[in-house]
Image (tube, rainbow, N blue to C red):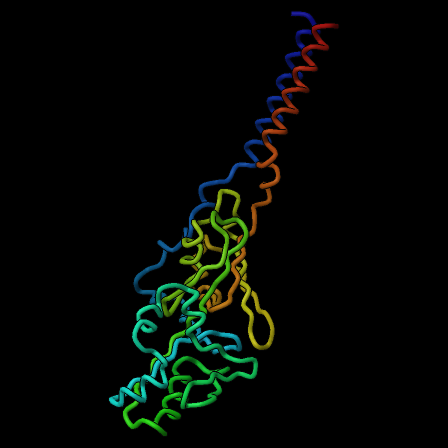
Length: 265
């Protein structure tokens, strides 16, 4: 075997080694794709419980569903403004909920027919029920008050299959649930670096979550609140993985050029 042939073999092996090394270093391991991978290590005797759901306090521009019921049907109808077809169409779509709900003003009040203006910002839903019931007792002796938060929306952005804004009609929502609503994390998503942004009256606070670790169950960001934003970061090798076809073409072109030059020589 002559020197030129050996030289071509060495260059080809070098290119193959480089390609193989890059491919192996850019691969995502199985452990990186598993959620809560160490939760099986929890013993029953540990009495391990997830973080309790935080109490949401009503903010300005929230939209609320409010109904006041009593044996005085005429007065209830005036307060609730729900008659006939209006009542039947109330829950048909999100637009109806927005139009027919009570929006909290910038000053922190809602205005209910007959009952007037009632301050609700900074209160929990239970506290808002107590405030409305106290006002309703002026006109109705047997008032029953129902209050729900309509505008419970959470945004999911980053490396998920269906980023967007999602409505929640449950009393609670976890970060795992909203990620499932968004179609799960993509192959390019970093499950160890999920950011939850939470706007509050005192500014925006953030929580960094590692979804592969059971400790997220103890994080204040595990249970989401209205207006939270969940951002899933991309893995570091995303840019390389996206450009693999281009790099493959480039390496193929270079190796072909080297072989042609060696053949000419």
